[in-house]
Image (cartoon, rainbow, N blue to C red; front, side):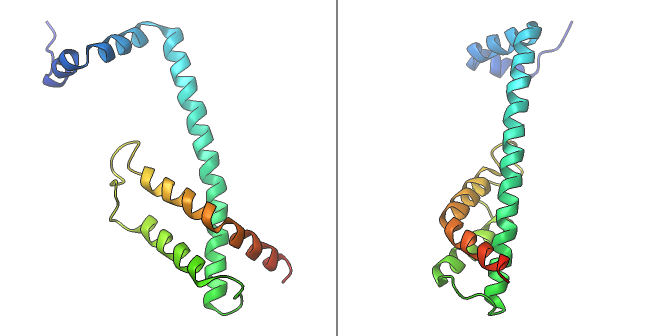
Length: 134
């Protein structure tokens, strides 16, 4: 005799369609394999996106440092302010969505990072070109 947990009962009662879909996935090796492949592909894309963003963040950090050291001043104060504010938010323990929440915890950081990089992309590109000429 197997015990059914409170959570099992709750899900079966209030989410019967989800319960049926999960059971169908568990019963079908092909469906489960397809799901796992889709998740893997999604994760691979996300990791690549993070890798690309990581390089851009390193460029931004060098830009801010060169500005701080007065080596590079062909950047607006607004861009410096936006860049520093977003970077502080990303490392701050205070988040709109706490990072410990699985899957969505880092979502606000990722969204903000995407907006930051898109907003500052031209400034970053201009800095990288300047840096190559040094």
